[in-house]
Length: 272
Picture 1 (tube, rainbow, N blue to C red):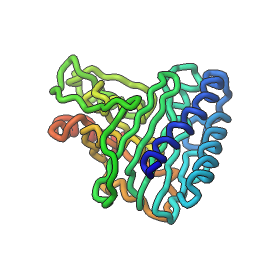
Picture 2: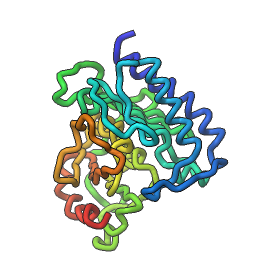
Picture 3: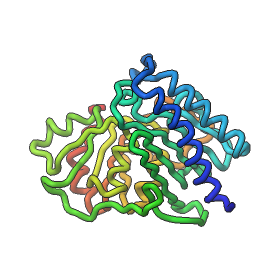
Picture 4: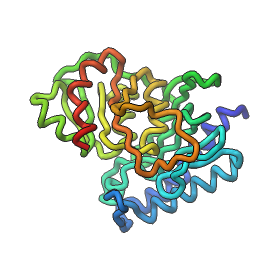
């Protein structure tokens, strides 16, 4: 088994195993509120530990950064970034849209992403090497079928996704040039662009574990990732604590749409 096949097999087997237990817990778990106001459940903590232990056993030389425990970026060439349940509020309320996200970084930049949505049995993955010098398989996939972004122009029949903290976009832009959707899951918000369901989406305050995997999949599918922050997101810095760092982001299906949507969503940075 070559390296990338091993990586993909590990990601799929681990997230499907963890996801099977989470489906049992789904809608039947107590939540508590973290200091930043987001929810956390025992299921989040269990899944985080299960995935970290699986990585330590399969790839002991790889580092780990996770939402619930490990927030300091390690001094390793390879590092996994884990979001054990993206969409915890949906998970606790019985809304069947939440996922498990794994991103693999090489020298601080994501090169492989995998997101599993257990209630839908949707498994997304992609490879994107940038200027890393790495080679291997390419493309973005949903259940092993290739996916691509949508080529259409903005219109009333096309979708654009907002997050809960970007509602000011609607107040300041009436009417908005696409049908608006709000999904409650940062990774799935942006994956709908990779899969061709939506033309674009914005996330006002995602953390690094929300975006590491989808950063790869979106670009591998032909999409454009546009940071709304002054500094580039990647590469991550060794020794930095990423627990409180947000990354306001605009994602669109093709580069030509950045100047169209950017003036409409740029305010989410100041209002978040």
